[in-house]
Image (cartoon, rainbow, N blue to C red):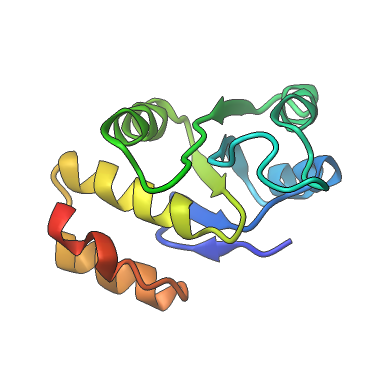
Length: 135
């Protein structure tokens, strides 16, 4: 499991497995956001399986599937999930890129500076310049 920290409160990464949830809890995460649609790849765990593990661990779970690129509803849902989170958030998708882009757009809409979000993503290993015009 890879955890790429964007800031003190938000990290992103690639697909997790149900057995990773306890390690995320131990790392201090209180909210898990799944940005993968079910069935994207045959071997990926379904959202409900991850949700069961997250709830069993006593954490908060959001399933915000982002398909092609983040659409307005995805960004709005991500913004709501981030705003309501009580503590550290881990968001994941196949590689972490959609989670990084969607959260950056949501955070920009909440008033964070776009260039800072681009730098933060780059430090975590993500190039979000394709959505720079939305920040």
